[in-house]
Amino acid sequence: MPPIVLWIFAAPQTLPRVTTNLTSLTDGRHAAFFHRSRISVDRSLFPRLPPFRLNATIWCSMTPANAQPNNVNRPRVGIPWRTTDEEAKRITTKLQFYFGSVEEAGGEPVPISLQLPANQFAAQIADLDAFVLPGAPADVSPELYGAPHHKKTHEADANREKTDFAILEHAFSSGKPVLAICYGCQSLNVRLGGTLYQDIAGELHTEIEHSREGLPPEAPDPTHAARIEPGGEIAQLAAACGLENRSGGFDARVNTSHHQSIRDLGRGLRIAAVAPDGVVEAVEHEPHKHWVVGVQWHPERMKGDPLAAALFRALVQATRAAAARR
Image 1 (tube, rainbow, N blue to C red):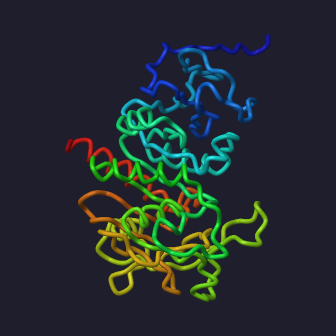
Image 2: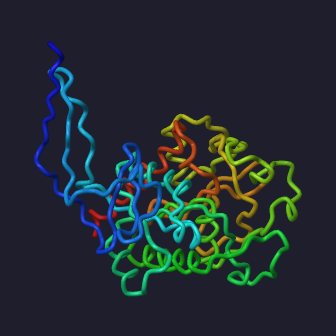
Image 3: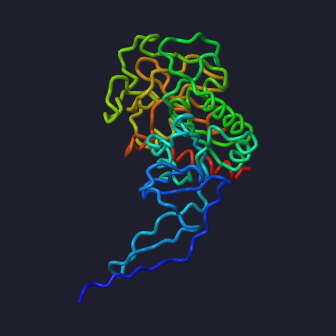
């Protein structure tokens, strides 16, 4: 007699709240989010969903499979699209890393369009609990910090700039946490009145290779040492992760994929980490008050790294703490 396989369907779950024109999809590992009316990426991975999601468990024995986590009580973390072009073409290859890291840390990632009407944009970000500003192939326009255009500076993305700046203005006024990564870290610094080195290799003449220039897309990110300065949010995470403590600071190893970096600090920022050549690798705004952290490296791509995972967990924990105070 052939084995009997039973399909048991649980009762429908309550869906997480979403904005009018957004929905959530999952590929089994990460949550990916797209505008409902314009989904066009890899439809084989993202079939049309029913009005509600059933939690189907296949029993191969008397022991049920592990239940999948839902989004109930997860802080909603807004993540803008990296560029206008990627949003238009629905390119999510890099964006998926941010979604996955937020979800693994206990948050619910929510995409933020770079082209929403002002009223819809304001309503959406008001409904979110925290933000991750991701990296991007674009560069922040040097006009925004009063510098001439360097020949190595990449084309700016005006939609991404105005979106980041509006998110930061809202986050600062409402006390919502922000994790700014790579381009996002530079955007944070410029929004607060800081400036940038437009090309590290050409302006600093360092022997450390900070960019991925010349590497094939499938090559792993280069890495280099970084010193985490004492007294801030990242230092607390480094201590909890067991990183080596030297003279009050901590030795870390970070990945790198950027050709620009912070030059003059923006208002209220402090240096939280530096590379051996002096390049600023992380900043914090008023540590232990309003959780705003910027890192020049890419923790979302450092799978299995304790400090990288701790950054996203700290964002989610800070979000819950901020919500409790409001």
